Image (tube, rainbow, N blue to C red; front, top):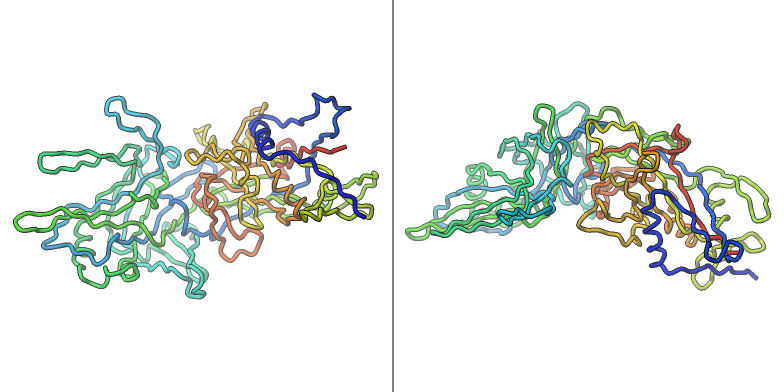
Length: 560
């Protein structure tokens, strides 16, 4: 009959409370029974480092539609080089079959797309809020970018013609040395510069954190209202008159399908100015993201003000031109890599194999053998019966454990030679996001982390995804907690033994972007990493500096 060993159960909230202190410390600590005295405690504590492997994965053809936000502009990473982001988007009117009335005359056409901003204070004189857009602005914030807005003449399909049950996704494509913007589908490559229609706006601008002031004049009364900082431009009125106002009564303005076929969208093409620029995240999903036609129509002897509004519903995608200083390598899956390159906007990521190769295992009878790393891990922590088989708790279906993992962290060091240009704080807010490659989901530790901060992603999920911290020697490192991920492997026999690491602007975003026709373990990546223009370099498991090699450290309890 199989003997069962009962596992010490600790309330989850207490574990999380203790973990929050440990996760924020500069060093790891083994908690021992100092109060009882070591000889009187009914458990021992221990520490171990597991054999893992980490290697690079170069990202080609990543999904660029259905992203949580969109990048626009020019960014020059001191280490990696240049990325230029442009946008192709459909628009839709908020009302169909419009009646513009008698003798409609356009006063102005205004494009407004909010930046991501936060309030940092109040103007003592006006009482207005003071905003910052620094969290979503990359590069030289004082530089200009060149922006050309064209009518797009390429039809963005809703469904894949090869499989009508599937949506049509679009993927990144880079043509070396080209200044054109491309995308691709399963079987075609699209050059959006070959589908440029009428040039609607040609301008240079610098993103501004100033609130938008709107003035409404009615007779002798003037009313001011404020909007959050936004990309706000006046567009050519004649174009919108001939394209929209003059089409009153036509089938083209009668429903969404007809309109999307008639007016296929806009192409926002970004370029640098004199080799410099910046890149901003735009919130196309905001209710304030609109194109508004302001016009008047005749009513008797007077004229009445009216508007016709478009939002950015429908397909929208980012395109990327990457002129990197060097190619991001594909990794050594056998020996691991010395350095790992995490770069968004179709750059690179890292794969961590938590159980790699053969390791030396010593059983309870001090017999030593070489076992696959995963099997050795299971035998070290699971209870065995007299025949050497794993014991299962019949009431839960879980494997019974003889040791308890209190904490498990990936310890990751930043490469100290990374080029930061003249900005020593360039990587201060970098966040490394870890996800389960088998299921393309965050790890369990992410879901049980109570430190979510919707208003400040830079300080969110800090137990699972530790903040960049400086150690006693002045080196920067990260600690990625995967305690529950490993416990799930032990208890449930989960096969989720590989972790993906990417750089993320917003760790609160958990949606994914597909990899086109992937033939390896990486089939999707976190969508937030696609819109993270910066890059960083970290030490891998094959680093020449043994002290900074990526490690998986375990702290466990061994009941006596």
